[in-house]
Length: 333
Image (cartoon, rainbow, N blue to C red; front, side, top):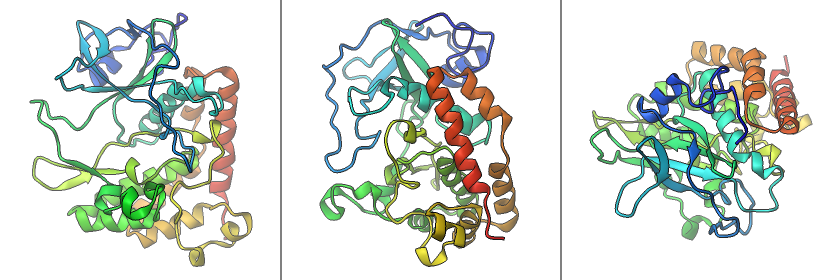
């Protein structure tokens, strides 16, 4: 990795390794090197692509990791890893695949820093050959080491490859997720607001892989359920040709489409307002969320500029944000 003055965690300037705030969030305050002391030999990874549908999640290898003596290392046998490392996928059909770890890291940072979305704690790390890897702290463990009960929405919906086909995680709609959330969460209105924000964020930042398994509920110490921190957020349009929405049922029934959506084939803010009303987001919350996402955010550009993306991909990422923002800002009114 070439020398940098950017924190590979927070993307703040003035740091040549992880900043103190990154170390606190991601590594429990321990001093940890951003360099991983080994490299992956290309071609040895067992990466399997989905046969019918190419998606980023279908080709990304995940490695279990722990931190020992200030170093990120692979999890030894019979130990539980507290981190997940995602190296560059070994799949030649992805565009700009070397930028995938930096893309996921940037998108997660934008979600958290700009839009205050609760995300899995994350950073970039670098193998000793200089290649980047995305690292994220697992959120399904308690401090005492016991596992937290957790289910994604494919499991909650009872969908498997056997009963719903190979693309089971792409079946249904975001409204279906909302109804399951309402059914399974006692304080559902609070969580619904978070879910609503996340669906808009995924649209605005071109995450075309926000499928059923990328939304989950986990048990609290009181025995009820809440949404997990957001994870697997990425601008997938840079790497593959994507639809606006990952789920085949999309956002709202076609009968509810705005005139803009019907004519342009892309939703505008009116469609997200319809969606928010249909899933029970309180009007005051709904309006403030729409206003926040409708406003061009200078901090987005600052984080893109500070990111570890190649310059060409930075330009593509900015252009993608501007295009989606313009689409979102439109209205029938």
